[in-house]
Amino acid sequence: MFNCLLEAIKFIIPMNEFKKIVRNNRIALIGNASSIFSLKNGYKIDACDIVIRINAGFVKDSSAQGSRTDVWVTSLNVPMLEVKTKFDPKLVVWATSKRRLFPSEYLDEFKVEFHPLWEWVKLRFTLGYRPTTGAIVANYIFSKCKPKVVHIFGFDNFASPTFYHNRANIGPHSGEAERILFNKFYKSRFFINEN
Image (cartoon, rainbow, N blue to C red; front, side):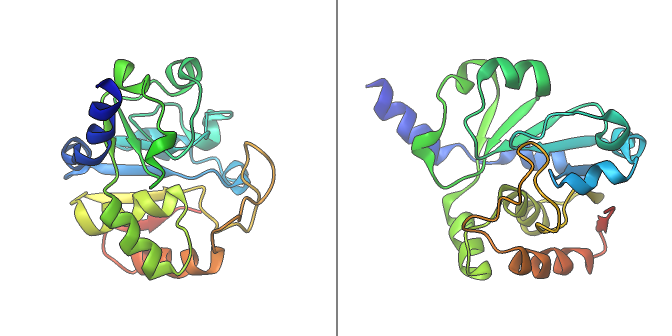
């Protein structure tokens, strides 16, 4: 019975809390490119109203990455203790279409929302490749939310390795397709490239 209920929850929890948190706020969206450490933007990140981090992008250097996490968007099953001690988010968003990988214990500790599968499918079709977690959240903010401004840090479309495993994790993704997508965001009035 519990498993059936959990499966249903994974598909029906809307992103209303995420939209509410983002609406009319200054957002810092923090990617995990190693290049983030070449700039000391921590003070800019912490000055934003809401800080969103991705996957295993724990703070290693607050002068480059800022110091807090308000929303954690993930496609990775990170151990609960690490999530609590290194992120301690107000909201967790499960981004990947792979719902079966979702760690159910997150529901006991955090407010959780699931990125809508149909939005993932649309983005996958647009890119022609599987989207990264960063592209998923940026695209959702761009298309569904109404922030005051979104500052983008630590996104270089695989020009530098992902800092937490020191390799360019291209996998099923396309840096070029995502560069084009992010350039569309930067042409809008409310996305700012801080890289």
